[in-house]
Image (cartoon, rainbow, N blue to C red; front, side, top):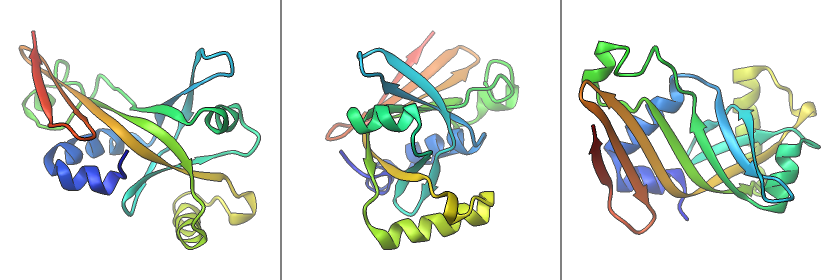
Amino acid sequence: MVAWGDFRAAEPAFAASVRAAFDADRHAVLATLRRDGAPRTSGVEPVFHAADVWLFVMPGSVKLADLSRDPRCSLHSATSERRCGRHNPAGARGLTADDAKISGRAVPVTDTASAVEFLDLLEARTGLSAEHCPELMRIDIEEVCAVRATEKGAVVSSWRVGGPLRVRERP
């Protein structure tokens, strides 16, 4: 598993495309595992900060219970027809992914200085005060995937820790 900064250093162009897909809409979907192993999806607003992808999760939430029990997760960017290459001719010629997925494990942030810095950033962006402190987590990345629609089909790019970037065209 690696931090976002390590992935970005290994695959800078791909990381920029994935980041743009997440930045296009602040909302994303987080997939976790329920106690019985069934999947659960929840809305989340990930933040790319420093060298990590951060999640702030409300205390007592089922999302936090899932991640505390089993940290495996997958974060999927919001997908929109407005950005999709098949519906937006400008997108069809662009290099930015239409949607992206980051899979790995959610790890609690235990470094106080990093947590305080992030909470200050979060308060400045959202107005969420430290007294309503969320549980802070970051994603240790195992795999990153992205799809970009083209006029002829789709381009699927994927990267796994320890492996090369794979790019496949699909009709």
